[in-house]
Every structure is written in C-alpha cells, then in structure tokens.
Length: 420
Image: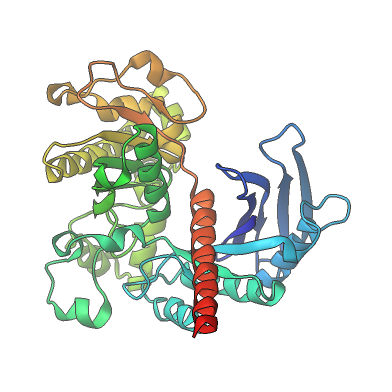
C-alpha cells in the first residue's frame, strides 16, 4: 500500500514514497526538487533513507514548472534499475500538503473540482502556499490518472477550536465577509504529536490534555483538550504567536501603521518585513538557532537577546495554555528541529517552572536519543516529552483512511443496490 506524499512549495517540491503496509510506515524514498521556475534546478533523491541500502541520486536540470520536476520524480520512482516501484499503478494514493482550506474544508478529503475550487478561493488567506499546492495537485492528476489524490490541510487541527479561541474582537463582518479568524498552522504536526503522546502515555486520545510545542524556524504551540485543539498560537496567518527565525510573532498592531507611515512602506513591504526580516534574523542577523547559540557563546549580546525573546514568547504561551486547561495537563511535548534537538532551548523553557512542579532531568535532556522519550525528572508534576514529528506519515495515514473509507462506502452502496 504505497502512498506518495507531495509538498509543493512556490519554488520547491518535497516528496516521500511511504509503504503503509506495516504498522509504522516505511519510507522507500524521499527527495527535494529545488529552484522550480528559477533557471537550473536540482533534485536530490534518496533511496531507502532509513536503511543501510540508502543511496542518494542528484539530478540537475531546468524545472520551468512543477510539472517538469514531478515528471523527473516519477521517472526516478519507476526507473528499471533504481526505482522503488514497477509502475504508477502501484500507488494506492497521493497525499498532498495543502496549507489553507478556510472553514470550507476541515478534514482530509479526496480531491475533486470542488476541493480545487476551495483551495483557489482560499488563496487570499494563503497567498504563498495555496497556488503551488494546487499546481502540485493538478500535475499529479495528469501524471497519475486514476490514482486518488487526497488533500490534507495544515489548518485542519485548528479549525475545531471554540469561538472564543478563534475569533478576533474586530467588527464581526470581517469574519463573515473575509474569513478573518484564527486558523492555526503546523496542524498536521500537532495532530500527529497529540496522537503520539496519547500512544506513548497509553491513554485514549479522547482523554488527552497536552501542550504541544512545534519549535523550528517556524514555531507554534497548540493546547490540546480531550484530544482536540482548544487553542493555538498562530492565527489568521503563521505570523502570529512565537518569535521565529524570520517572523516577528505577536506584536502591538499599532506598530504596523506606525512603521509604514514613518518609513513610507507599502503593505507588501511591511508584510515582507514582518515575515522575512524579523524574528531572530531581525534582532541579531542569525536565523538558525544553532548560529544564535554559537554567537551567544562568543558574547554576542544581540544573539542572546534573540534567544531570550524566543524563550520568553514560549513561556508566555505555555503559561496561558496551562491555565486554559485548568492545570490538568497530561504532558508537555517538544518537537520539530529545535524542539527535538536543542537541549539548551528546552532547559531554558522549563527553567523557573519548578514552582508549579515541572522538573527536568538534566542528564536525560542533554542526551540525543532517537524516538519518543521522557526528559522530566521522576518527581515532575507531569511528564515533559520529546517526540519526533512526522508530518509526511500523518499525511499518508490520512490519505489511506480517506481512500479506504470511500472504497468501503462504494462497496456498501453497490451491495445495497444489488439487494434492492
């Protein structure tokens, strides 16, 4: 049961082919096509990445559009010598990361004309991501005729929040007319982590209360109550919430017109300033936390400030979500690039929380281990966990669930018609 997972960006296309026959999913190959539409491109294709048989193939050629990139990907998947499948008909489904479905689509769906129209209609809410997401879907429909395409939306997990969590105190017409509300992002990751935490704690997902922290170049926190998203740090766009690599996170809204007036910036220029030249990079010129730590070690005061701003934003959000859950928390979880690998950040986030019973096992936190693990001390009020995220596996699982459900429904309908 092979599922091709496609994440089509504005100038790139990430992919994985996952064999879902096993209980955990086995990655047969993965890759990245870069510089689509930007002259000479590069595709890096890894065979069996988690196996001793791993091999990397690199191809360089022009990718004027996503079609040329995906055509090369298909040729590598089915190559007689190096391919991992014999033909396109060995695919069970294609799962697509889609960023924004607004309120029209709140769960994974098989792509049809209506779904494509919704993705297009939501472009004003996801201008950077929805157009390439849609392009990837359309190309896959052409290249894999008859194979179901499933769209899995990044906003899915957050759209189940209660009104008091997702509404802004703006004139109500902006919600009705323009869809202005908090949607939340990194939803596929937060959903995967919530399920993984429940499994790790041997607890039904419907009973899980947890705070999941997806910390990377883009960062967000989700508050999970009874297995569902109660609140999340990102809002109408991924800009709201925590300080990030290049994003400013939450700021006083009055700053926006003030800077625009003072520096005569257009809306597009102001948007770029907040999304691309702020965050760590805006404060200290480093956008990667590893570089921030290296600069801090050399006494760079701005790098230290950037780190403290990041940690402070996490703690503020963590504290608010703790109270939203009434203090009834089964676990807090670190995931993604910084969350999984940066013991310094984890230590700084937990530091000072001993007063509410949170205690870190310093030795366990300092170690690098694969897989889910507990980094809290035995007498911590509740577990502090590190759980690797796997958005591609979550997309593949969602694709299998949706296609299987449709097939079961189809069989049931035919049987019912025969009985009649």
